[in-house]
Image (cartoon, rainbow, N blue to C red; front, side, top):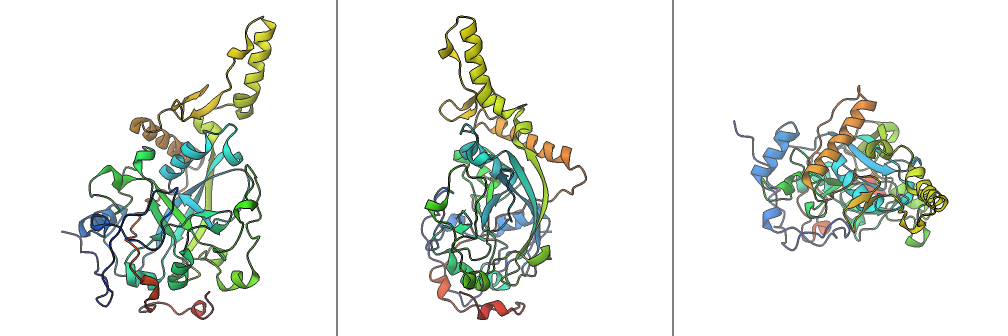
Length: 377
């Protein structure tokens, strides 16, 4: 039997304005544009995505249970006011931003996994009929996307999502991950990034406060007590089940980690990139050979699209190699956490931001009562 169609937008809402799809992840979208018609919600694409995710489209906000991943150092901090990704998305980030640097950027040495349960506010659902909002960039515990506060003010702290263009890395899922694509194309299986809104997302560290390769940062710096009280973020207290009220839209549990050295087959990272170079020079000098022939190992060089001394990351746009890396990461998580349940990855189902949307009256139909609306900033 065919799946039921996506519920239509409320009849009183004006039609969306059409413009250009937001720019790639390096330049997060603003809240002033909407995608062209081919990227708008498609009944066929949405129904198929919902079926792959485990059911038909819902008539209200549903709880979504999934894993997100972070490329991190040994430092620990809460999963809020940060960006996260699915596993393909975090490998995409590592390949672009981390392993090309020697030593690795920000002392990143692992992939951490988190179990997230999310439910958007009914106020958001009443307009968009989706489980995720737009993606916003976070840096140093502060949302850096202009006008993001308008969405949080209008709907509460909804998790955002976006796909990553395959033209910049060939990491693909084996299922549909986004509706922002031409149905049936590879772009429909793109990596995903997520935005996890936390306390006072509009305030925090400025660019001058962000120190390169710093392991620890005080991400609460620059957040006023009033802002922290009135804009508490979406993470539910004590890991409770998300209720969909504005300040309890997601819960988080740690779900393990894998080390990049083991993933790439590097026995000793310091020896790999540092000690081995000087050892080569000493051995060459003692043998009366040229020391300038010694080369420093690097995991990946974008200039030659391969590593020196290690070849795990060779071929950033090679679909087969990207698939092998994705499967290798999945296998490591299964190896170290064999008893953890498998979760179906979510579909990024956000449609668009409508013209003048944040001037519309908030539609509380079917929503749970919350005191947050009286104190919001």
